[in-house]
Structure formats: structure tokens, C-alpha cells
Length: 111
Image 1: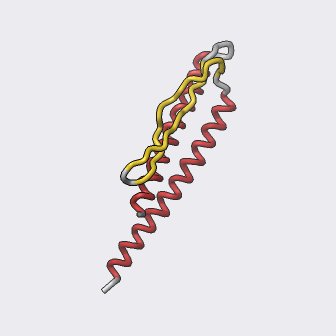
Image 2 (image 1 turned 45 degrees about the horizontal axis):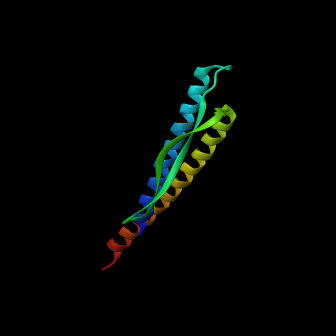
Image 3 (image 1 turned 120 degrees about the vertical axis):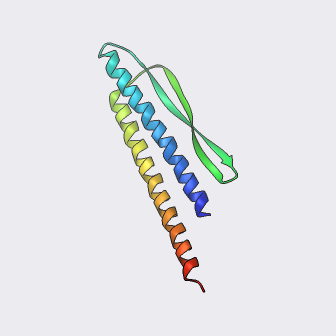
């Protein structure tokens, strides 16, 4: 069970890393376009995929929001949200790792 927990947390971390990449590309493109330039905002999309190990979150790509331009402030908020979600997934991963290690230690102590 804890291996499923580790896999789910790792898939969440991968998805949030991809969301951070999309936000970074948006900011870079907006800065390159300049103050009078326009660059449509890319928005990350995620899918929940059922596997033999349980449900996993997968990055499904980025879609372009037509008619909107990148707002650096909005992208910074997206970065903060993705960073917090990544940290949460990392905490879950660490808890699962600790749980697995303690289970192994209990097996060593048993006669």
C-alpha cells in the first residue's frame, strides 16, 4: 500500500513540475514579446489515470487560451500554487517513505 502512496505522490510531483514549466514559458514569452506585444497564455491540463497501482495524476499538455495574454502577476500566482502543490506531494512522499522504512524495520525486529 505504501508503494501506491509513493507512486501517487511522485506522479503529482511530476505533474506540478510540468505546470511550473508552463508558467515559466509563459513568463519568458511575455517578457520577450515586450510591453506592447501579445502572447496567448498556455494553461496546463491534467488527467487522472487509473493504473494497476491506483489513480495517478498525469500532465496532459498545455492548451492555449485564445483571446488572453499572459499576465505576469497571474503567472506568479500559478507558480506559487504549483510550488505549494509540489511541496504537499513531496511531504506525502516523505511520509510514505517513512512508513515503508518503519515497516521494514518492524520486519527485522520480529523473531
